[in-house]
Structure formats: C-alpha cells, structure tokens
Image (tube, rainbow, N blue to C red; front, side):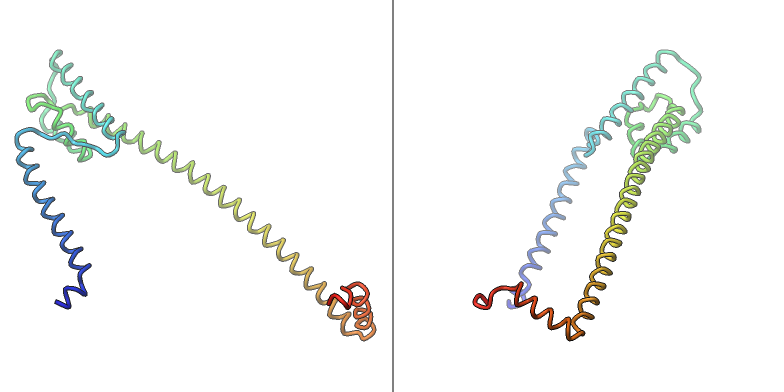
Length: 194
C-alpha cells in the first residue's frame, strides 16, 4: 500500500496511456467496420495539400472522360503500372481511387506530377536560398557591429589605462601629492558637511 501511495503519479500516467490505447483500438475496430461499407476520403491537415489533391482528382476525372469520348490506342498494362509506381505513395492512392478499374491509366500523368513536384521543389529551394542570403547578410552585419563595439571598448580601455598610469605616477611624487591634498580641501565639500 505504501508503494502505491509513493508511486501514485506513475500509476496515473500508466493508466492514462492504457486508456488511450484501448480507445484507439476501439476506434480502429469501429473505423474498419465503417470503412468496409464505404471508402473514407482522406482528410488533410494542410488545406493547400487538400486543395491540390482535389484538383488532381478533377484533372484525372476530366482526362478519363475525354479518353472515353475519343477512343485512342490504350497503353500497355506494363507502362501503366510503371507510371503508377513512379508516383509518390500518397498520390498513388489518390490515382487508384479516382480511376475506375476498367479505364486505362494515363502514363503522362506521372510525368506531369513529377514536373509539378519539381516546380514546387524549385520554388522551395529558391525561397530557402533567398532566406539563406538574408541570414548571411544579417550575420555579416552582426559581425561588423561586434567588431566595431570591440574596437571601441579596446580604445576606451587603453585610454583609461593611460590616464590611470599618469595619475599613479603623479601620486608617487611628494610635491604632486601635497598639491592633490590642497586641491581636495579647496575644491571638495566643506569640512562642516563631511
């Protein structure tokens, strides 16, 4: 009983983890039952990715309809599977959902998606390069500022050392020391206020 009281927080954390695991297992079972009847649409956290996915699906549907209206020579099955395998995994799932089983797969779609992906990567690289240039200029500016401050501090320190050395040299001379005491008495606060 003493051990339970000493480790109460640990037990509460373990119980919370177990409860979450049970809920996720229960959710998967109910999701599998519902998923068998109707296919679930993928929900994306990023709205731009969801919009891009929707546009790709619409383009695929439009191309399928055009192909059905104007019959052309169908691509061999090997080329279709190669084109599908070239796609990233998340796009592969989208294409499989959008294309009916009887419709031929579009081999040019892979090239188009690859070109769009390359363009996006190029835009990202350009933005990163610009950001890198900005950071480099900020770094150079900070280094110049630090060097200027260091030079200013060094010059001030050297001047202080010179002045201190001259003052100590003056105080070693007995005549200059007497003069300093007289000046303090004359220029300092009155004796009554000390």
